[in-house]
Length: 485
Image (tube, rainbow, N blue to C red; front, side, top):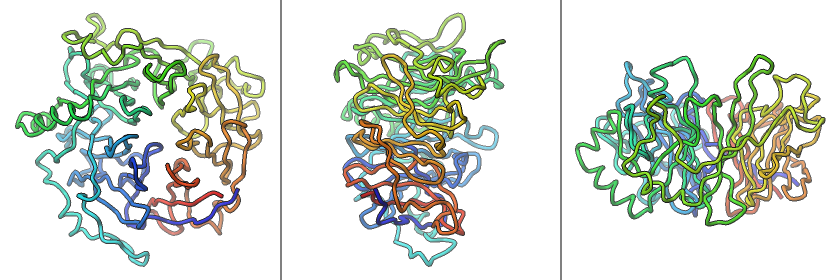
């Protein structure tokens, strides 16, 4: 395999931060990104943009019209698999110096996208330097900072109270992901009520939202959006959302959950998909903390939860914590002290999920979950985990550490890996590993100084890939593409 047609697709003098999954708009050759230049800079990031790879035109999709370091902030845009809708992290509109953006003060923002009606930036030449796109143009496309932007709807119902009804959360969602059928959204979550009780404890967990049908969702949210009370709500601590949201694991469970993914159900497409996540098991007197993979299975009637639980509350009357809905079964898949000798690291503190930060991914058939382990020789390996038995099987070669997060192509046939500085593809059926000739190593001849995040696959193309990197001599994060043949 060899790399051809390598191109830098963005040149603006600001960040172009791709999410680690679901960045491609449905039915188009368009990639969504936020304008962070560094991962932690969500609070001061104001724009969601898109680049059309056909002509490299840039569209401003959303702008908070705020340059405040305290928020609201936007980031991590993902795209619905079946329609032109985006979902991204959005800080509360009431963010200020006294109450800044935080893990508990954010929500999922939904945006319907029609690129023909979105502002298009004038194309800048590569010779333009510090300000590739004019501030005059941006000021014309932004909304007033003292009003709710049009057509951006919260994903979840939010209420900052001890007792909330089923379907409502009382904290912040993050790292959203659509299920393959587009009916569900997964996310990580931080509970504001629990955090206010004990701010020293990390209370991150995972949750899901059942989306209302598009027509029902649009009708109800259009009405709420146009009401003064709804506008006021998003500036405060509550909101009316497009989804019925709940937790898979309560936020004071001893396991801290994160980095989730949807797993198709093997038994039937009519059964809701499963949710896999990385769970951090706390240390004991005999064992250090360890990250393992867990699998949550939803009941077949999970879609009926809004009707079944209407009028009740998920709050435990004794502990005050939010409980998961009935019928979810939770199973620990990996037991890293019991893996094969090839993967059993001699140091118990280096066992379990290891390597660069990454989100779990799953096979299209639902039989496998993909992750990273550190093997007995201290090499970070790509592995697949059986959803039936929990067996962990190495996939990438021994002696070659994975240095960037892996990614799966939309067909589920290939995985991309950076081993050292080189690009490899794994055939997920045969487990054959192919080096991609012509991939620039990060040396004097490489066009970038730093590769950031995974190398991802475009949908509907002949093996075209895209990624983030900082060009030689520049601090700005840009988007690149190439083809593998």
